[in-house]
Length: 219
Image 1 (tube, helix red, strand yellow):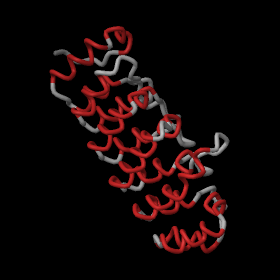
Image 2: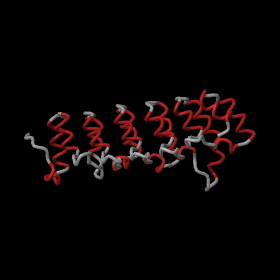
Image 3: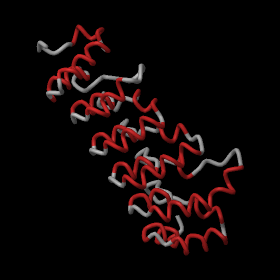
Image 4: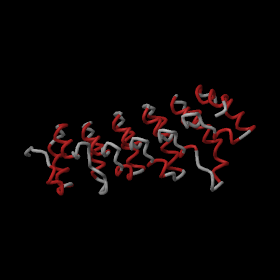
């Protein structure tokens, strides 16, 4: 990545970025040794305005069928700018990037999993961002299917965090994964997290086939 662009992305200097892009539009495609593009860098530092301006600069390039949006690019840890923003707790920026991906129909960018198997929904739930998690589910329900490298589903993590609204939304998706680490599942997690009985009944009713691994508790 050009050092001038790196500095602009780090500080949120849209004016400098635009001047560089006007001279050479392809400069925006540069990456750091860690594989981060300027959108990743701006996401790290929570510069939403810079991200908006970069994506505006990118628009003329989107007509090229061989062009991949900066939104879909991953760094060497497998993170898209969206995942980077979610991981660092930049909720407003993450919501904006999600909306951009959704508008451009970049489903794979939304569904992307990092090197540890976590997608944006896993990270949102783990970090306690309930509203963002609900927004992710609404815009891309298929996020609920992904399992991390530690065999954790979004539903399992939601129950462990006792995020009942997120949990219920995931239950409404027929194909949601429910597995958890150490051969556990959402039912085990519900018992451990002391989720209200009503929700436990929903889990049992939904996953009645899990009789071989039900936890030892009675309703």
